[in-house]
Amino acid sequence: MKSSIFCILFLVGVFAFVGVQEASAQRCKVTDPTGTPLNIRASPNGRIVGKIRNGTVVYIEKYSSDNRGREWVRIGVYRGRNYVILGWVFREFISCY
Image 1 (cartoon, helix red, strand yellow):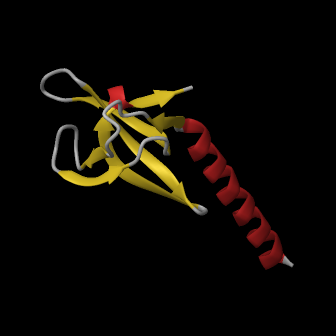
Image 2: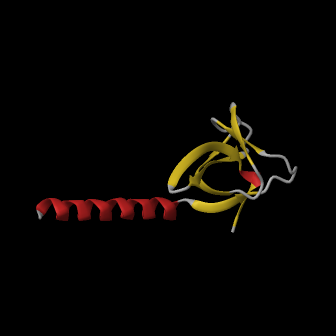
């Protein structure tokens, strides 16, 4: 009986944490005006680690600026039920509603 109660409380805690994580990230879309996939970088203006297509729903995790004062954001996406942080993109190419 005690183990069942513990399991239920554990699952409630996990779901509460996931809900808080989702609520804290801002939902946006990739809107690169060039029409080409947007570069994802390891750090603001850093090494390219991937690309993401226009229209993709992303979540802003963190804001930063590069040494030239341009704003960058760290983004993540949902892949099925899993949340994955992808990297940094130029903030100007992300639209949030």
